[in-house]
Length: 70
Image (cartoon, rainbow, N blue to C red; front, side, top):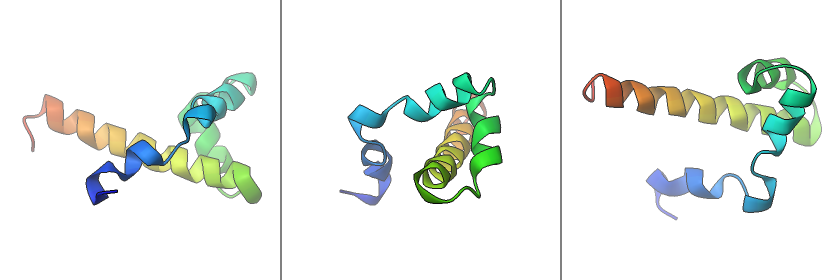
């Protein structure tokens, strides 16, 4: 897998949306829930840290699109 396409393999298809569902069940946004659970042990902590990373990447990509690649 190339370095630029690691994101597509970061979340297995059967797990897509599970973290967002946990956040919704807790009554929080995905970003809020990820920040809260980032230091949790085990799988939940890993999911939270990955969610934070992907949210940050999404923000950077969106910023580049709207600001002309700057």
